[in-house]
Length: 145
Image (cartoon, rainbow, N blue to C red; front, side, top):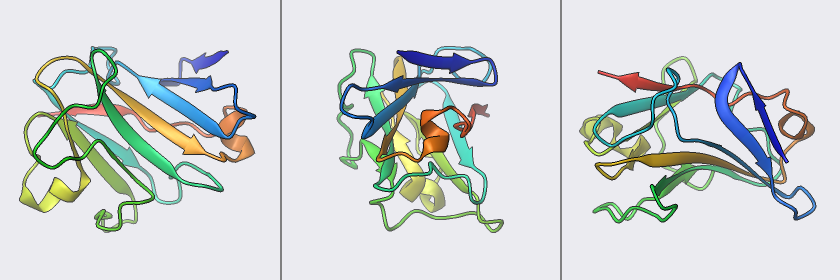
């Protein structure tokens, strides 16, 4: 059953596996526009606001038909398991999505996207209660110039 709200453009879906895997997804940016590789996006988790999980989490990019997008980095998700993520000076974490690199110094935090439409999923494994009950809100997907 989906849990959607007006405060967040993302929609929460709970898979039927004893709530061990929560998938929060969006097809749209913070302005309600379809995500497309023709644009670049930033997803910033404030300090202390990473997905609260007992297991692990990832931000995963899928193409328009929900397949991984082949790319030269062979990168389809970013999250707990990525040890080279670069945090901002204030402790926040900004991840990037788009068909063009956000710059060499930000590439460790970049999910390469197809030129066309794509979706972003936050996959939370063994999510804390705040994810399950909707208290934790995912960050906005902001279009960057």
